[in-house]
Length: 214
Image 1 (tube, rainbow, N blue to C red):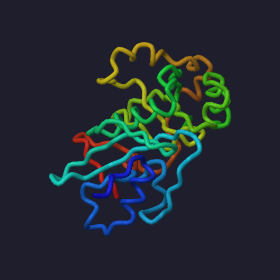
Image 2 (image 1 turned 90 degrees about the vertical axis):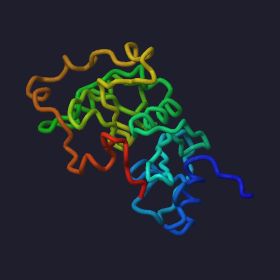
Image 3 (image 1 turned 120 degrees about the horizontal axis):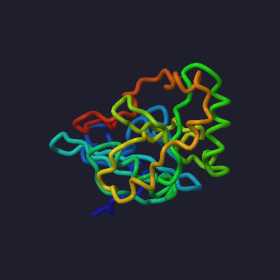
Image 4 (image 1 turned 180 degrees about the horizontal axis):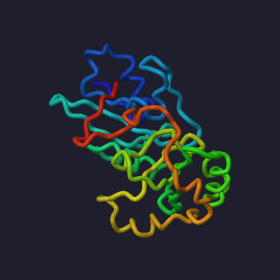
C-alpha cells in the first residue's frame, strides 16, 4: 500500500496527478491560497522558509475539511471546518510571534498607500513583511475573514478583533489597541478599506464553513 504523502507540496502534487473524478478524499492546496498558482496544472514548489497555506479535502459526505499547512516543510495542522482557523494554525507554525504584533488600520481607500506602509512598518519588526509574515488589520466588514496574500509582503491579512475560540487564553496579549491609530491623519483614518478590487469571496469563509477546493 502506498504511503500517504505529507505536506502541502507533496499532497498537492498527488492531487494534480489524479483524474478529477478520483480526487475525492485527497488533500490539495485550497484555491486562492498560497501555492495554488493560477490553476490546477500549475507547478507548486517547496519554499526555502516556512510559509503558511491551507489544504482542503472534500469528504464522501460532501463536506469540506481544511487544514493549515506549510510550503516549506511537511507540517500539517489539525482538521478544521472553518478557513480562518486553518489560516491561524498555519501562521502559528510559520510565524509564532504574529499574535504579539499590533493591529493597524487597513490601507486607505483614498490617499497615499506609501505613507500608510511607512507608518505600518514602524510598528512591526524589521524585515517582518519581507519574510511573508502576516499583518493584523482592524476590520468589521466581511465577517472578520482572513485574506491570503494581502499583507505588504504577500502574507496573510488577519482580521482583528476576532473571536479566537481555541486560543482564548492568548487573546488579550495578542490583540492590543492599534499602536499606530493616533499617527494617522483624520482624513486618512476616516475612510479606511481595501483598495483591492478582487472579490472577498476568493479567500472567504462562508457561514457554514464550506468552500470549494478547486
